[in-house]
Length: 324
Figure 1 (tube, rainbow, N blue to C red):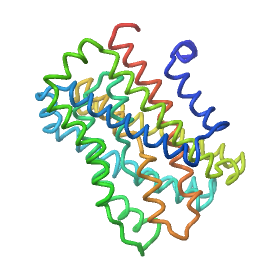
Figure 2: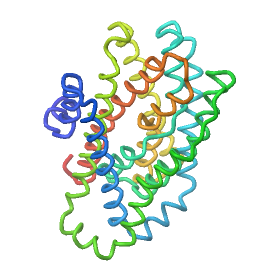
Figure 3: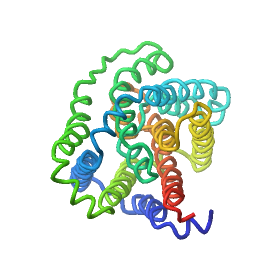
Figure 4: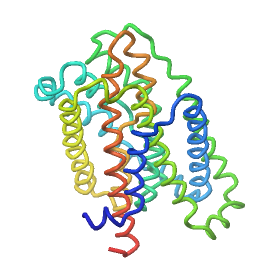
């Protein structure tokens, strides 16, 4: 493991992004520009995925309802149940406010771009990953506020309008993907001649998300809001929780008879939570609440999941290519 970490350039770059964001975070106008660049990179990534995938693979991905149902169960059933069950342990350990944030993290939808990118790097079922991750985010715009109002706020006093988020997801993910599908006869020959191009956008977009997300946390005063001991306990709680979820996401698809490519899609889509959608939701749902403490658990969990998934995705990619 140490040898693999030492020699894996992508894993090293993930840690470099976190360190860089800690000491040189992007902020202000530069953060706005960086956000635009990241958005463009994600759009290009989905355009390339659309151009790369055959129509048959897309149709198969759309029809794979068993896989989508399992990812949905992980995201909006298993995660919340485990989060609620952990209350007797986490409240004394973290305090009520951080536990609320931890539970809010459990109610969030899956990530989109990183789930798909990791699935692609690991040579999993990208078509199904695109459908599952996108569906998770669309449905999460409705389910997450309901879960928050039931188990955190008791009775939500604020309406949640998902229209803007749905339009944003559609424009950012679906439209480029469909455009790539339309232009596939013209684009695919170039992609075939440059097989490393999509992988570069896969990994590059993940690195940009890590740096941008962690920069936002640092600028918001991440290191001033909690003590070192509490932060260490939160990191431990997130790590243990992620380990449990990943073990379930690894073995349950095997027990249910999914093939190897589908197992990878379920693993990456079902074990992750979104920071990009989580922070805007928190700003709407937790008006008047300690927002910094609410979003801190998802910030920590997000960084850990990206780093761990980066190692696993590259390990599986080497397995598939016969390098291990």
